[in-house]
Image 1 (cartoon, rainbow, N blue to C red):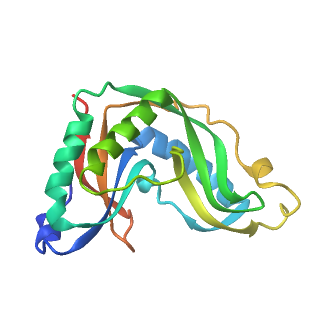
Image 2 (image 1 turned 135 degrees about the vertical axis):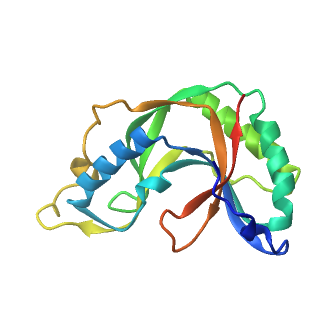
Length: 202
């Protein structure tokens, strides 16, 4: 059930910050939360993602007129229609930015990533007719865990970041993707991302 309330749509000239994404199921959120807690004891980042907000971005859409959301939904339903479910699993750690002072700490995904890239392309193609533009950099699926590295905690200063990250989680770390969502960003709230609509492959 989507929580997105109609009060958001009272003003058609209002803009909402939107993006499409794959949700991360609860058992994956929990294993990532455990990994993040291990990292928090060793590395200091300015912002840690709320575990309920873990996701894999497909396309960032940006500030969108509320009056355009109906057309956007139609395009996204067409992108989802008939797409086949596929399997993903967590992979290793990575960073964006300088390795010694990264802007983003993330967890990667592996598995049927060719299907993930195909889905992302379908979404970009479906939204391009509405004026949404793809990012210039190549698509790099990941789950953001933390942002803005501030330094290693005392006792760990002489170690590299990757030495301090926990190893592979031993529980079930795979899941079947059967849909994607349209999220709206609610700055200052926790969780920060609210589902506007869900687009099932069936």
